[in-house]
Length: 393
Image (tube, rainbow, N blue to C red):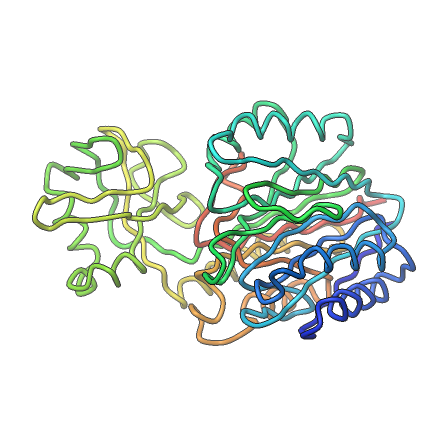
């Protein structure tokens, strides 16, 4: 039986916060000690991160601790986006075996890091596996790492998100056991007999038709449909194009999951940033390397469209579920939350509406790792929910 519980705290004293959140999580789970603990702590605790992870480990009675620092945390139906905030999820029972992992020195070593992760977890794999990763957003190239993990660990479900900070530090921190480090990846392998139900809700919706790339240099698109790329972008952006900085905060590129697809629709595309644009030169630069003949579209980050997408994602997950979830992990892009919806606890309220008081913990991410059709991929502007249930009898 899976026993799980979450706890949160906004206490200013970091040790008090760790003890309070862990005690609440253990109480909800009906445990005196846990097999593992996930810990997500806001930047406000800063230099106290080592004390926090040691305190959680001691209070939960386990060394299998993993997590990261973040601009905000998610637990107990709340999304705490500023100030001191701590979220703890504990697991116990005889269904899941947990193994923490840590790899330092990410920068420039994406494929090597993937190999080290695979070497650590491969001997611990079970019938079902959920690999949760919390890398340094600033120093990892996620796409080559995820591609290498797919080759080395076929069939293993991978989720997670890039650690974040509030801009006051300039680096992010990863937690593993009693280690706190930057330029690293921490994580937890959950292995055993259980069901995994994944969903990814995109905050962006298509703006008009798709376009074919007709001229490109590296990541700089010169032409779309035989026209200047800037002109096509400006048409899609509408009045936003008059304020380029604002436009690039709301308008992005949607890449079809199926290469060459003639349209992009819900669940059929992923998002990449437009990193620059020039009306004088007629070009746009994107965080992707398309080829001539590829299709892409423009998408808009919008609260109402995001809400509709979230509800559709949760409805699809609820329809798939055979057993009530025992717990969940939620990785939510920093561009969502109250800044998008103009209200707090938005996504958590909908998760509660569809799945009741299931223990869910997570944090606000720099990027998301989640499902892209039949594979794991790098997501942006998404909320990724992983729900774990007992296997039906």
